[in-house]
Amino acid sequence: MNLKEILNYRRSVRVYDKEKQIDPEKVKHCLELATLAPNSSDMQLWEFYHITQPEMLAKVSRACLDQKATSTAAQVVVFVVRRDAYRKRARFVLEFERENIRRYSPKERQKKRIKDRELYYGTLMPFVYTRFFGILGLFRKLLANVISIFRPMMLEVSENDIRVVAHKSYALAAQTFMIAMANEGYDTCPLEGLDSRRLKKVLKLPHGAEINMVISCGIRDGNKGIWGERCRVPFDEVYHKI
Image 1 (cartoon, rainbow, N blue to C red):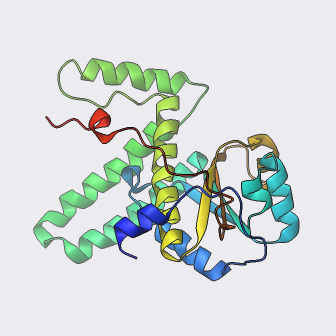
Image 2: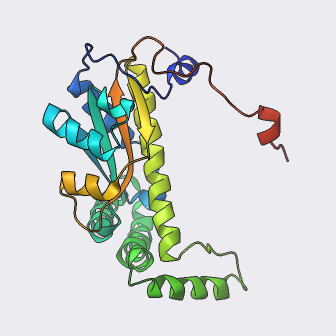
């Protein structure tokens, strides 16, 4: 299929054919492709929990309110945001960038570029992602608003703003995963109706982890899991050419 065909084929399938299995290695490969998605500052604050065991599938489905989209799914992927891993990921990206610059940047520019990356990932990212009961976020917000008086400045820097940024980045990865799955002829359904506390307990996630969404996977059971034609607001209402 070409891209247009893939996008038209992908639907949020809510009932799967339980007799038809899917290859877990292909699902894993689609998750690897998902990591190619763009994300804020390349921080990659994501983890993927690929559920294939029947006992665990039942527990995950229970936490997802036993919706048909999970109770009939062949496999499930839980997308988890790890804002609490920001220091580890920032160090990883910094080490990568140092070597990247040494290999691909002109020698006369390497020192400055490495220094810029060290400032960005060694100082700025920890400052932006650090949390302390909302107080640090409020300080960042006040600082950003003062700076914006004199020059353009990103203003969405509160702790809740940064949480939104992390989840937006993860949503890009989730969409990439679903497109990759459609390319394999597999179906998916993104779910946010779930008991996040119960699901975190099932997966034994640390306190700082957050559920972004659950994506069920399988092969559609005819037209049972698709509710008629796709509904979209007329494009002219949402498209603005300036």
